[in-house]
Length: 347
Image 1 (cartoon, one colour):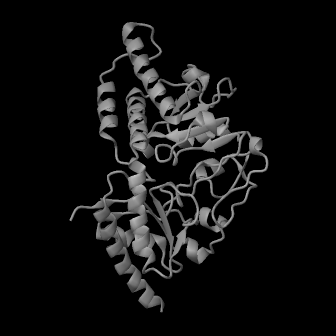
Image 2 (cartoon, helix red, strand yellow; image 1 turned 30 degrees about the vertical axis):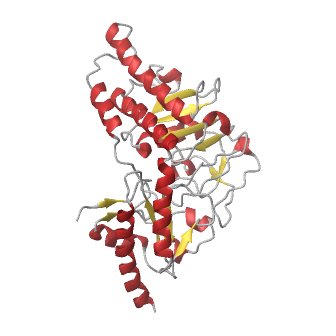
C-alpha cells in the first residue's frame, strides 16, 4: 500500500506550477544586476515573482525582499532589536527575542506593547491562530500563508516573513515583507541587491518557483480548497477523539489552521509514535521539523500549561489539499491500533 504524507507543516510537496517555473528559470542566462538584454530578462523573472508573492500576501506596495528562507528573514527582521516574544514562537524567532510574553491554556498570547514585540500568525505545532495586535513590530506569517486568508496591508504590522516550501514552492527561498519606507540595515552586505536589504546574486530558479507557488496558493484559497481540508481534518479528529480517552487534543477549542491536529498522549513518547506510524506507512512529526530529534523538549506545549509527560507525548498531523478522507481514516486505524496497545500496557 502506498505511503501517506501527513507532515505538510514541515514542508508541502512541490506544486507542479512551481516545478515548471523552476525548470524554465534554469534556462535564464543573465545576471539580474546586468543591464544588457540577458540581465534584464533575468530581472524580469524576479520582479514577476515579487509581484506574485506580494499579491498573494496582500502586500501590494510593500517591500518584498527575497532571502534564503524564513530563518534568514527572522534574523534580518529581529537581530539587535530586543523584542519581546512568547515561548510558543519558532526557535528561529526565539533566537533573537526574549521570552517576556506568556500564553494561556488555549495558546493565545497577550501583547501589551506591540511596537516592542513579535507574534506569530499561526503556530506550526498546534495550528493555533493568533489575533495580531495593531502596531506589531514583526510577525512570523509562515504557517498561515496560503492556508488562511489575510492581507499584510491590513494586519497593521511593520514586518512579516514567509517561506516558499510551506506553500508548495522550492526549499531554500523565502521573503521578508516590510511596510513601505521602513528602514532596515542589511546583515548580508556587498552588491546592494534586494533594495539594499540583502546582498548577493538572487537565486532566480527558486524565486521563480516561489512566485508560481504563491499564485497557486492564492488560487486554492479563493476556490475554498482549505475549507475541504478542514473537513477532512475534523473527520480525523472525531475518529480519534471517540476512542483515545487518554489523549489531549491540543487547541481543539481555539481557532486553528484548517489542516493541523496536535495530539498529546501522556506517557507515550511522540518520537515512538512517529516511528510506529512511519513503519505503518504514514509520515507525521513530533513537533516542528526544525527541532525534531533534538534532546530538549519543545517550548510550545509547556507554555500552554502541559506538563513534561504530556508534552513529550505530542505528535502533529498536518494534511494538505491532496489528502483524501480515506488517507486519514487509514491513519486513524493504524494509530488507534498502537494507542490501544499503549493503553493496555499503561493500565
